[in-house]
Image (cartoon, rainbow, N blue to C red; front, top):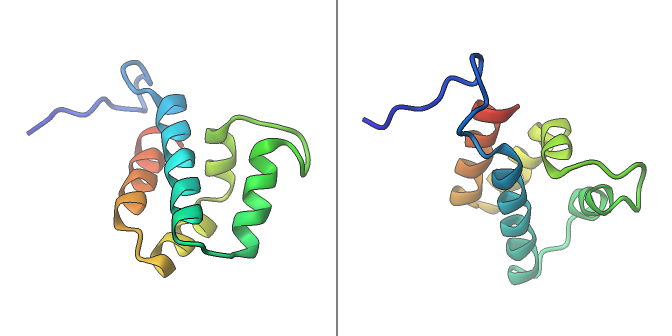
Length: 93
């Protein structure tokens, strides 16, 4: 079994920012590929880009909207993205 770093001891060896950016990129691709229209996605995308409030890093916004993102991914049956989100929550948030 692969040993996972303990986030409560150290974030060392966990690329939280990189993983968050990869999740956001994959989420954007899923939105465009699926031609999905969702009010939360529009809001979240604007937050990420700093068009709706102050601009923060992707991990910050993911952490703030974990439940909304989880619900969105469950509704669309995006299993791979759900797994990415779960890993971000467990390791980085």
